[in-house]
Amino acid sequence: MRILIQNGTVVTDGKQFAADVLTENDKILKVAPAIAEAADKVIDATGMYVLPGFIDTHTHFDLDLGTTITADNFPTGTRAAVKGGTTTVLDFATQDKGMTMQDAYDLWQKKAEGSSCNYGFHMAVSEWNAERIAEIDNMIRQGVTSFKMYMVYDAMKVNDGEIYDALKRTAAKDCLIGVHCENYDILQQRIRELKAEGRFAPEAHPVSRPNEVEAEAVARLMRTAELAGAPAWVVHLSTKEGLEEAERARARGQEVYLETCPQYIALNDSRYTEPDAAKFVMSPPLRKDADREAVMGGLADGKIDFIGTDHCSFTMEQKAMGKDDFTKIPNGGAGAENRGELVYTYMVKSGKATIEQMADMLSTNAAKIFGMYPQKGTVSAGSDADLVVFDPNAERTISWKTNLHNCDNSPYEGLTSAGRARDVLVNGVPAVENFELVKEGAGRFVFRGPSMRTRK
Ligand code: URP
Ligand code: ZN
Ligand code: ZN
Image 1 (cartoon, rainbow, N blue to C red):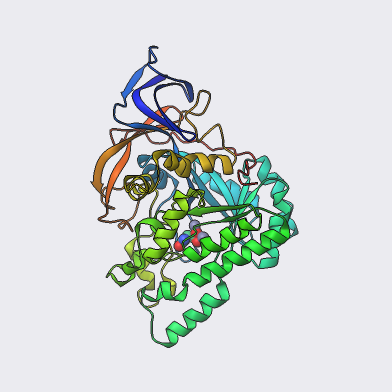
Image 2 (spheres, rainbow, N blue to C red):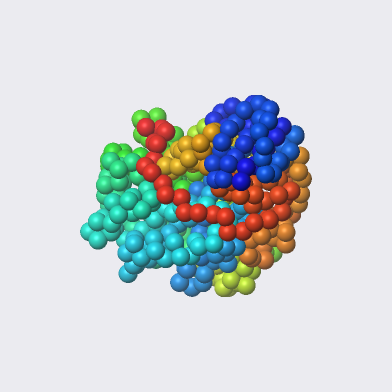
């Protein structure tokens, strides 16, 4: 099947230019002005940007927390993702204690069957010992070239020595380890203090993990990576101080990759005073406007590399598990559908960043850093036909009622977005047409290579 996207402005690899794009089956065949070849389907992209399919570097679909399971699984989560222009998600396959990485990989392959966008896995590890270490090469052979370690959460937490060892062992293989940076001991102590004061409501959640809790952990990770001689990757960076610590490490010559999320751009901590505040309970928590400005500035200056959603959705009924104790509220929110429109609205429409930068932060940088480039992340002949026709003038009010994710709330409820994915191709298959999902299940597993380590 051949699809011709005509009259659009192609935005890719730091440039924009008027060109048509011709796809054949699952690949881009040609990117050139006024392509006159026959096609089975023609998409008129007049007034539209044609962008590389977006890559969401951070989702949690079908994640079992032990107490409850995320509201979205792969079928529902990837439907929402693709409607928002995301053609690839990198989900956190999670090796719970008592499992091997291979068990987690096999389980995630099953969970991801029938996905509507492409999917790859980071491997989140809950323990670091001789058996897990012996599995690293096997993961790489199966296309998993990135890992995650948590400094928090009782079920997942590893210690600094284990992070040091894991960084040291994976660096030579050009694998990255994303670290959830928060100081566990301090936030636990603050939770005890807050409870002693009788503070059990969601407003206490951000108080329990203030900026310093993230910044200290980022600084510690930076020194740990320095000692290990390894690159560092901070997931879901949310604070000005955390960014400053990462920049300090870069000034020392360290190789540091940073991810942030739309919630740290679009929302602030005033939300914890709202009646439905539980839906904003996520870690790290929403921050002050000064942090939002720092995060947006970091993106605009190229200090923050890419944006993942940290989509980890729960219904209001699930969130009510913590109605008498904020520490029992399952952490996370839904974002997979809204990342592109939020980034366009808050970064591009507002004049903070260019559309070329948006393509980098939503797609190209992640493709390079996570071993998918130039298969993905670029609008170029020979690359995968994962494409977004983006309407910069499409306005809407975001609501969980019209989002395709599977839960009855959205952190972005009621926000107005300007600019949205109109048409989306996944592996050359039209999955979204005129803002509507028209095809499910077009996703495939993405076998990833080593990181390009763009900051080495
Ligand atoms: O609150 C969050 N972010 N939940 C998902 C797990 C994580 O820490 O990434
Ligand atoms: Zn995390
Ligand atoms: Zn996460």
